[in-house]
Length: 409
Image 1 (cartoon, rainbow, N blue to C red):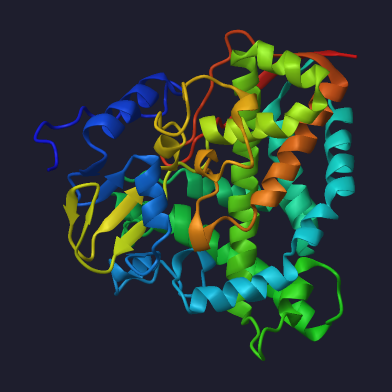
Image 2: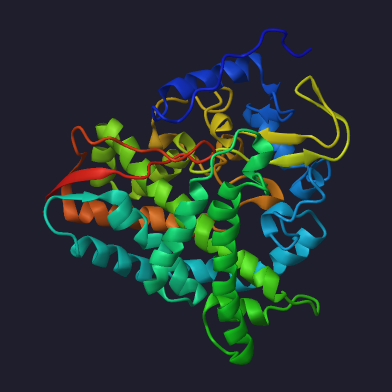
């Protein structure tokens, strides 16, 4: 039976982690599935998060079920559709965005990372502004075939959308469509981004044969089907915006984790083969995206809690990654805990099931190369004393700024 005692109020990410981690542990113990005041069901245990993300028939990604009249979500967005359309779109996108495509980016990512660090003057800089933001933006822009010099535009659009604050979990996806804030911070930037990408898609239709990702998406075919302009634009927008924001937060979170665990940094510096495990443990400890969103298609029971049909279900990736039933001493940063052979112990920062993040290999590659580049140039990296850190809103786990003081080789 569901517990009768009400949980404590949820802390924010404003303090970085401490209070929130303790609250999540209490929720896993006492309220593993909790209905909030808006009627959304939050899921906290690793096993239950996996169960939700593994059953798209019961837990639909088609969030428009909640508000059929809404125009905020398109059926062309890969992340918010169900099979069979999802299967078709993913196969088409995967034909162009292949593992080989990502692996072939390694020399260019290494070059961009080196150039960004070489351009820095002095012994202080902001990791986010000067390195963690421009690195993935340049890489993704070049991958898509749009000018990396336009990154000021991308930054403007993403920063506006990241400012949107919501209370009801449903509004994480829909917002208040009648509100001025939603129009200014979400709808207009999205229209501008879509128009920008549509120009590039139209150009590739008129001049096929390019090697960039948009050109490949234009020509992708699976069983006689191809992607529409809207579908290409939506995927390009998802990759450009979500890809650079999450990777930027990953790089900031990695430095934060190492700053709090100097022994782990020392080990990774002397044993470079440990760096991918540092990235993996950072993803477990501080996943950039903290929650997913699903909608129940029928009445069900989850972890003993009845969940009616047509309700939003919000699995917590952050809580699942700190589940003591899966990760021993989960609040300890331990890169050596990562064992790729133990699927049950693997962190799920990139989700699970059919909606597992297509950009995960690219984020991991960028994280490894970025940390290698930082270690290569600086013998000492510390967070500048007294510098106030600004965190992203709930739902995102990362810093907006990270002033560093370094010692060069």
